[in-house]
Amino acid sequence: MDDIPREKLTGSLRRGAVKKHVAAIHVSGKLTLLQRKLSNVLLLNAYDTLTQARSFQMGARTLCLMVGYNSKDFETLKQSLRGLAETVAEWDMLDSRGQQEWGVSSLLSYAKLKAGACEYAYSPALAEKPADPKVFALINLNIQRRFTSGHALALYENCYRFHRTGNTGWWPLETFRRLMGVDDSSYYETYKHLNAKIIKPAVAEVNRTSNIVITPETRKRGRAITDIHFAIKPNPQLAILDLEDGAGQRRAPVYDGLRAMGVSDRLACQWMTEHGEDLIAGKLDYVALQADVKSPARYIAAALRDDFGGVAEARAAPVPVSARAARLGRVQALAAARTPTQRDADKRFFLNSITAAHTRLNFERQGWMSTLNAKEIVAF
Image (cartoon, rainbow, N blue to C red):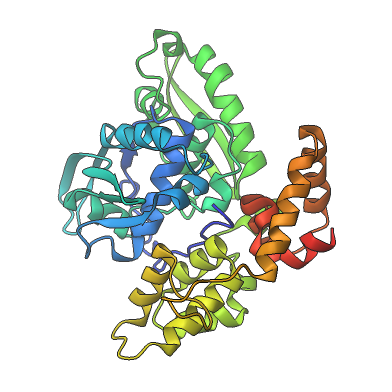
């Protein structure tokens, strides 16, 4: 996920006590860590047109890379998509008129891989929920990629939705076990086991990894613990990973070019992170040279998705191997010649030399092929 999307929710939870039921979408916690990350990437890709479009599409290799798969590992991708289609999302909340609404839907209504692209869709009833910022909070993919535990990421997702209210509200332990995906295990019916194996490790990783700090509290009926909730506050030490951390990208000329073509803020930041400023600049130049383009934003989306167009290239003409491509080839060869231990040390050493957050994240995603660090990589 390259420097992955940094989206910013528009809209705030303005209602006085922010009714405790507004964010009551629960997704089965039985997703693997990679499936959970995949779900968030797909949602972010679709978010800007979630209630308008019937289906959504993104490059399958890009999708694999953004969630940490090998870019050619389509079998794992198929298994994960199948898992999302089989996963249930459930909501129990008040609608806009104050009437109680319960619903259930598969997380994806369908998904298919064809011609190098992943096409997928949500049920109309489910699509309405994430589209409302009062109900659902998108997860910053720069943060989610830091998680190594599926339980920790599940806990983060379910707590972050309430970060504006300061606490999650009380969950019966039965509900909490379901959110963590351990409701079918008799072992975790005992709170001592649930706390030691699930709650404490997950809380520690959320507080160490994410932009919030959570504190669990419990209540009892008699001597038995029956409910749990989490107090939530910002994590000042990781403010760089907050949802508004795209300031550096927004100062780049290519960001202004994308916005001038009608690309949303969120999507502009996502594309810059995903593809790098150099490639985006080439696509912008290419689109600007085309006549009778009715929707520049859609045209550049197609250019990025299908990888056509360049600064001055003719589409029918063969593209010569550039000096930049040759340099990258030498970098790849040099890296391949190192031992695994040396390669790991090289990456850590180079990563420590990067100071800008967005270029650092770009290198973490693209490695030695990082477009935003090309000059420094060659020098290194």
